Amino acid sequence: MFKIIGYRLLVSLPLLFFVTALTFFLVSFTPGDPAVVILGQNHTPEEYQRVREQLGLTQPLLVRYGDWLGDIVQGNLGTSIFNQEPVVAILNSRVGVTLSLVLGTTLVSTLVGVGLGLASALRRGFLATIVDTVSLLGFALPNFWLALVLVAIFSIGLHWLPAIGYVDPATSPGDWLRSLVLPVLVLSAPIIGVLAQQTRNAVLEVLDRPFIQTLRAGGASPASILFRHILRNAAIPIVTVVGLTFVGLLSGTVIVETVFALPGLGGLAVQATSRHDLPIIQGVVFYFTVIVIVVNLLVDLAYAWLNPRVRVA
Image (cartoon, rainbow, N blue to C red; front, side):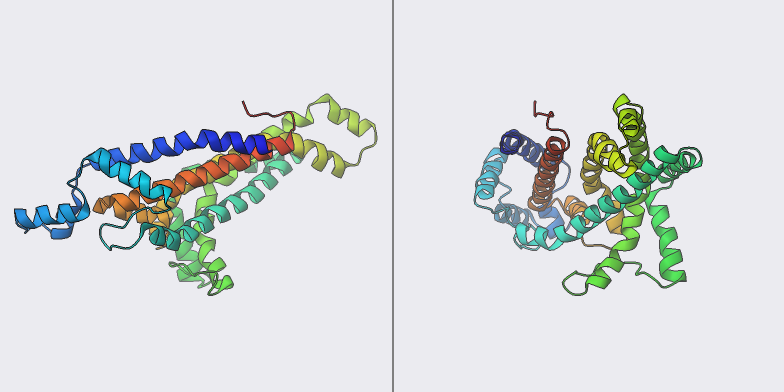
């Protein structure tokens, strides 16, 4: 286990450097000038030059990136260009919202998707058709349309759930859960079918192996065969899809956060991009990259636990 952790962390350092460097230079070359956004169109050349100097935009690009890397080592992601607040403080106030959405969606999708896939593999027939239908509908329905429909039904019509907003779990755990129900349902819709299909295919492959027939002939209980042998052997491709789902949700929350007015990192990144607030953009990318590295590490550890023969290449 420690070898896997050490190897993955070592490999992840170049990835972290490459992603942050690429983001820094790409954003720097995109059209837009934060000094113009701050001053507006009616400004003098002297005012423009003064603001650029205050923001540090007159320094060469490599020097600015080098300064940013130096600050990272000290745990400092810089200061927002527009509100002059520390980037770390801004991100920390929003990362909980995004993680709540992503973790909640991953949990719901995994439980429902794996449950449906397992049931359709064991029962087959009509349940397999349901899984295929759910998968097709999940991909066909746009997120924003499904969000509006759910809001119209459960918020406006039935008054069961809030339409917009986010409640901190420290303030009210119950209201926090209620504020996440609709966004999580919207994000889970296209994922449940994928996980169900993947689970069904993986379980059917294991069921066709000779050792399952041997276990049945030897009198092993159905529960033991299911949980100790079938699920364990089918789990690796399922864990892979769950890990990819988690990573994909980091960018997929942008639309949902906008529709439900959730103050997460996705909406912050969109706002910072429109303002050309490079420190905020860099901070969001840095947080997302670290989360991806942690998720990949957990997936590798899950592989090693499920199958000791799996080794990191």
